[in-house]
Amino acid sequence: MSADTSTATGMGRIGWAVADSWTITRRELAHWVREPVQVVVGLAFPVMMLLMFGYLIGGGRGVEGEYIDYLIPGMFALTMAFGLEATLLAVTQDLNKGVIDRFRSMPMTNGAVLVGRSVADMLQSVLSLTVMIGVGYAIGWRAHGGFGAFLAAVGLLLLLRFAMLWIGIHLAMVAGRPELVQAVQILVWPVGFLSNAFAAPGAMPGWLGSVVEWNPLSATATAVRDLVGPPGIAQAAGASWAAEHAGLLAVAWPLALLAVFFPLAVRRFGRLSR
Image (cartoon, rainbow, N blue to C red; front, side):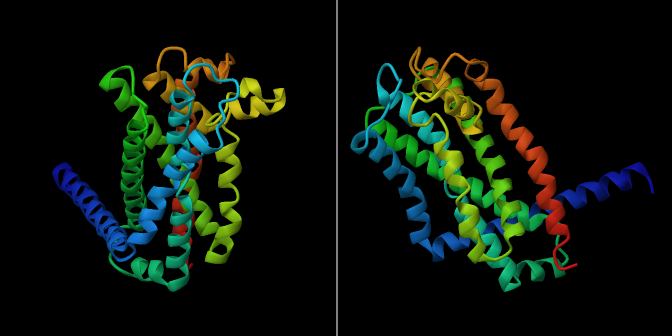
């Protein structure tokens, strides 16, 4: 086979993979139209959390300056962890209804189901983040640092979401049944609340503050504060190595998680129904 033929074949495979993945993505987006309540609830939940902690419960232990400047970037990062329950449930339901088996029996690129699912989830994450930014501006928060820094912050948030998503996809296939998803969901809350989203680690007991500082969500939250917050607000996260190198960790953590869970999810998918 000539080099040109091999290249054409390779490009053809990539084209079919993209087309198959987009077909699955469209299927997931069609669910938004048929089940709008679930989409609305998913968008409203982080907004309620923001308003509750910002105005009702309060917080900001160890935070100097305007608490809203500290809280909102933390809520952006926390929002990237929320909503995985919908992904877990959708994957397990498809598994139990035989939908994935039917897709696997079709002349479809292996893995397109997972890619399509992840693309749809990322689109919803962009929508959710857009809503959160809008609410933040509505209650008085403002981004500092320029448009480039703002885009970098959004990129870090979506990178974290992408990594969390593949953890969710893998755990869904391990759980296998929708009734087991509730047990897996419990894991999301400790990771989310053991972060610096609401309070500075320096105001916590020493051992707990150390755990919080090395949480991947804390790294992303601190990096986002540094990019879009007013001067000095990011320093409220602490003066440890993790806090001072939050930008590095905000990239390294998601990439490390992807390096582990992406191949695990693909391998698990490939072994289904064997």
